[in-house]
Length: 355
Ligand code: TTP
Ligand code: MG
Image 1 (cartoon, helix red, strand yellow):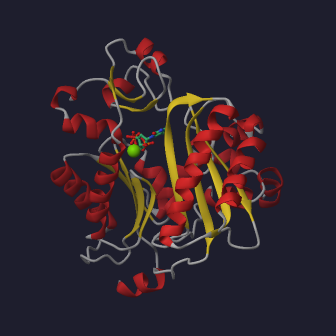
Image 2 (tube, protein in one colour; image 1 turned 90 degrees about the vertical axis):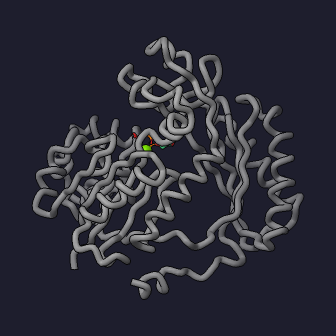
Image 3 (cartoon, protein in one colour; image 1 turned 30 degrees about the vertical axis):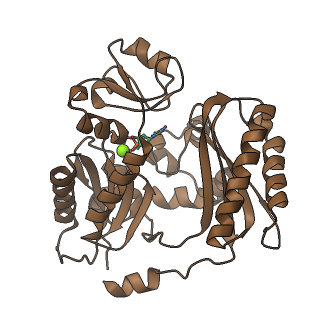
């Protein structure tokens, strides 16, 4: 049976929450982030985007483009709460929810709790409910697979609903710019452009083997998605796969000497946390977010569960030292343990029975 997948993505998420909670900001160009002098923009209101202000743009550049721009400090706790409220709305329709970040998720509504026949109607109802209950807007994409649903949700932003039917998929994908393919990052896009691949139709000229040779594991995936083949299930991530902790630095730091004491301190808290939940892992991952919001993760694994506080700290510090060439300025550091002793039983079997 053909699946019915919806991808939902909140519009200008952080900025919309700020405009909702502070009427003085409504209708105005705002940038949520570090401000004019320090740091970068996490996101901008649609009023600011008209001037070219974008995510990950340094504050001074944003101000140059839009002199009347208002800078607003992020309130991450509020965005987390709103994200849970949005999720609660999704749960009225399905348990098959796969969040990709705070503001976007896939939903499988093939059989939904309200027995609504058309996925398009489910999407319309969710959009209306988000608007009524949370005073925010989102955009939705509806299709038979995750990839197309994701592309569709971005097609008519903000407050847009786009449906891609199986019969439309091929033509749609042929004319889709390569950078808009889900999974094609900046680096891959550049590589493809160099190979003369600008749109889906250009990608189609390469065989599966050729793509595997050039793009490794992603090659066969690209081969399939450009043909509208994507059988990946919506994966409800109920399973605890990692335990982690992170901290945003007071100021961006670039020298290992400055970062080390903070990492040591974080490692101590991390150990306390692992002990409290009584769940240790075989893999320790260091996460670094750079000042331009790139995320770097580096991991170290052992055959045993790493339970010794000093060992955890020494792994964290080595990961930092070994990778100091990978970053210039760091704004956030985090530590995660995975390959856990107690990985909860997957709930997905039960969720499928629910429907
Ligand atoms: P996005 O969904 O990419 O952007 P958006 O919701 O602000 O705007 P739209 O979807 O309408 O195009 O990201 C969701 C939130 O994640 C965004 O509000 C802020 C945060 N974010 C960052 O902190 N840094 C980034 O580089 C990006 C892209 C987003
Ligand atoms: Mg969004």
